[in-house]
View 1 (spheres, rainbow, N blue to C red):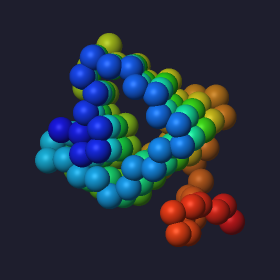
View 2: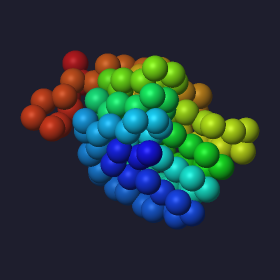
View 3: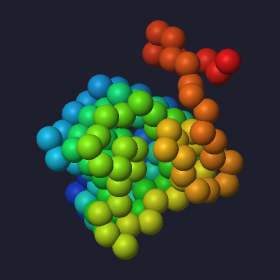
Length: 121
């Protein structure tokens, strides 16, 4: 659970984090949130792998994701963000999510990654 970060009853804040090539056997290749409401700003979650929610797995959690990129993850089910229950309610704004995500300013545009940085063509 949580290839990079496992949040259990915690509300971590991550700014400009880069989560790349993490893996988990079950859920949350990059983030597994259990009864947690993390705040991600300007983060990149890319090429993470898990059975479900390869970018982020939420259980009783409502993360806030702003100005971030969630792209190129590998999962059998629900690629980027998986909500395990109806009480999980992520708020995603001004972000680039591969499978698309409802929210103000969100886009669906393939980023170009170059030496750990991205460029848009």
